[in-house]
Image (cartoon, rainbow, N blue to C red; front, side, top):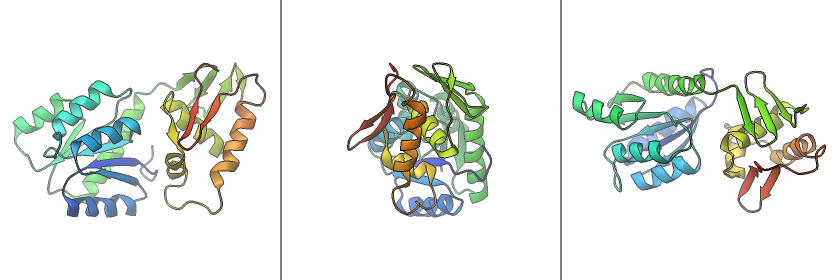
Length: 230
């Protein structure tokens, strides 16, 4: 991932002023950021919609950051890069953070440029471990080549329908909310009208129309998912 590509960052931090500052920092650099002010909400959000990077404070209401990280590692179906952002600066604190599964550790106060660079580096490091081939039922996606197949037949997909399909496949079998797809595709400004509708139509035409059973399912009022049995 290049440094100028938007990341989806989840910040779990109970200090309001710092949340505001981080929102401004990340959004100025084109990243999409969500926040949780306590550990319980942060864990729930990270599991429901895994971010590219989780920026995590240690001292949180509900459950602490170290407990959150440990539970995330135990419950998540994928590796979510975790950067601990804290004022706790002893070696023992750092070792505890790494022991529960943190990927990086940055002390407050911090330089904005360093935080941004570490988040980008974590997202890249995570993707280096991904296999190029992603399979869901009869669907196979070659992430390196940027092409998809169903039952071995190549799918004629334009760029945006392919990105939608990739997002759904990476999340499968979970549902991806409509708002999440829109934010991922157009992180800075959503185009007028309903752009997602036309791209979903193109995706269905390529993914489902040539085959007996549809794979792209609409979960009304919630979002979309792929049927791994199709």
